[in-house]
Image (cartoon, rainbow, N blue to C red; front, side, top):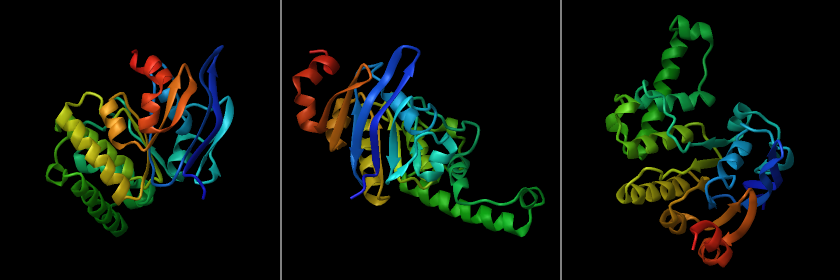
Length: 253
């Protein structure tokens, strides 16, 4: 069976520094997978390689069997990779509804003239986008706040909105960069339930970076540990987290 994501010896150097060095991993369809490691280990750099922000200087990566190495961010998103960010990047001055509609533009499009002159096709498309966006907001219990400014949502709900917007692009693979950052324990527990729900109900493959070990051990089936840009350990989460090398490098014990 073809893996949803496979990286082969993926890496990038900045000058003489190898930020990611020979990353090889395989994530099966429908899997919840974690990428962990100390600060500066290369985790976000790896995400930037997988989303076309950086071009790798070595190796390749494949989405559902298709080679995506060298493609730009827009092309990779249209192929089916979506991400959220460690620092929430919503359109703060747009409504909750409009933030999700931004993500829908991969699937719903109309010509410039149709938009400027408000031709019938414009209203038809907007109505369909509103319906789809509200469906997504209902999944995340945000439909009641659809007309709020995104900046006025509580922190935990802003995280949910960012995930909803990513899902609006109809991805095959969802990359979550430290989704629990800044959350209290109750919000983290709710986030864990949300991530499981997304995987199960959207038939989604999820790769996440996270420092919260409770979240990682609670939802990730397998993990890869990076340290100084290289793979320190890989495999079943519970076993990897007990690896003495991982405990030493990552947990500082």
